[in-house]
Length: 167
Image (cartoon, rainbow, N blue to C red; front, side, top):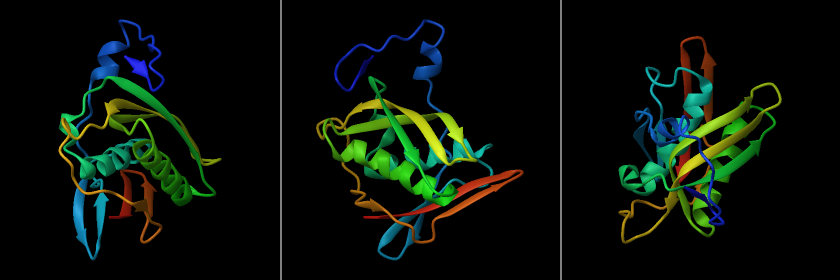
């Protein structure tokens, strides 16, 4: 496995199965006027961290058949916000940027390695590959994350996020 600069990433034999495993899909797409809204249902996302991870993967799943993405490289993304809603917005926006700039990275899975809910900071790693039209079916382009109806529900037994993206 390599990072975006092509430098091999060292992964121990013990870590490899965990890196290559892909979590279950825990998001769904909802119809919305002119835009797309997707949401992890309350049965999914045992933690807010997992709900944020699923929101990122869900965004990429709209742009291509996410099952076609292999774990060949990794990219790190950090985000900060003024509150949980701002943190979710910036987290998704930073991941969208990794897709829009060379080498057009698309993650198959996103893992939040540090989630500071008090200071609203996230560090995360995406595992995937460079987007390639010959390999990845083109879905709908996500132009931007929006604050429109952006919601974060972080209650005992209910960890959900609602996001509307501009397409």
